[in-house]
Amino acid sequence: MTGHTRRALDLNEARYFLERTPATLNAWLRDLPDGFQSANEGGESWNPRDVIEHLTLMEHTNWMPRIRWVLDHGTNAPFPPIARIDESHRKPGATITQLLDDFATCRQSNVADLLALQLTNADLDRTAIHPSFGIVTLRQLLATWVTHDFDHLTQITRVIARQYSDEVGPWRAYLRVISGNPG
Image 1: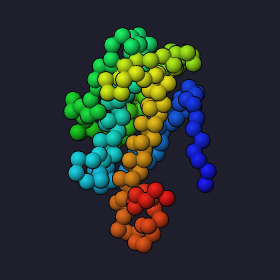
Image 2 (image 1 turned 180 degrees about the vertical axis):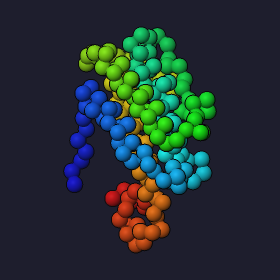
Image 3 (image 1 turned 60 degrees about the vertical axis):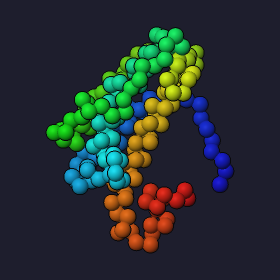
């Protein structure tokens, strides 16, 4: 196997993935049985509902606010801190359908706002100060937004797949999603 081919961020490609995350989650989770909705990887790990709430929180507090921060403030001041979890954004009585719909609405609005900015390559190279990482570019922030989605799609896949860890028997050794083997 050859090495990885890495791509530079392309705004149209980023849009492609950002627009599809809600539909992907919807297809996987809309009628997800209750036992899977609350399944996690043990301890304080997140279940699919937690992930959807987190993704929605990030739509409100992270991606577009920080994109605007880069454009408006640059390196004059660091990004304001954000919380990965905010109990005030939790919706314990909401159905998975309501959570998915809320996320889809937020994402659709944010992608429209992103496109309305008509960012150029020069804009993508603009910088800001992250409180932990130091100087970051808008391009890195956008690539992180896309990759953050992939990270949580992988997390949900892993949580659901691991519900069958005992049932797969000896095939577990071949199933990276369950075994953790890099493959």
